Structure formats: C-alpha cells, structure tokens
Amino acid sequence: MLGRFERGASGEAVVEYGDGTMRVVKPGSFVRCAVTGEPIALDALRYWSAARQEAYVSPEAVMKRLAEFGRPA
View: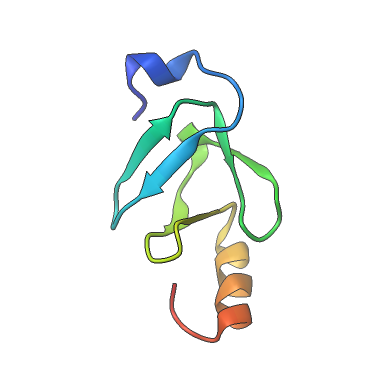
C-alpha cells in the first residue's frame, strides 16, 4: 500500500525490496522490470527478488531471470 506522499508521485520510483515487503526510497508511480524493461505500476508490483533488488513484471519474467543465473532469486 502506498503512503500519502507516494500516491501523487510520477516517474520512476526507487524501491528497497525485502522478503515479502518493500519500502519506497524515492517516490514514483512505477518501477521497471529487470528482465523486460517494462514499467510496473507500484500498485501492481507482485514479483521481486530481495537478494538481487530487482522487480519483475510477471512469473514468466522471474523464471527467465532464474534461468539466466541458474539459481534461486
């Protein structure tokens, strides 16, 4: 859920990803998928890697990243 300061922000956000949580460091309306480069609205962000500090647009993007590295994210 976004706080009152993040709701009206536009542009790309900077996010710190944790295990099951995320913290917005710099407000914005989206982050970019580490695999596809597609923008992901913060409200729609469901997939990320805390270890790699990366966001993913879909489960397919996660699987592609796992295949690239050959180990869990």
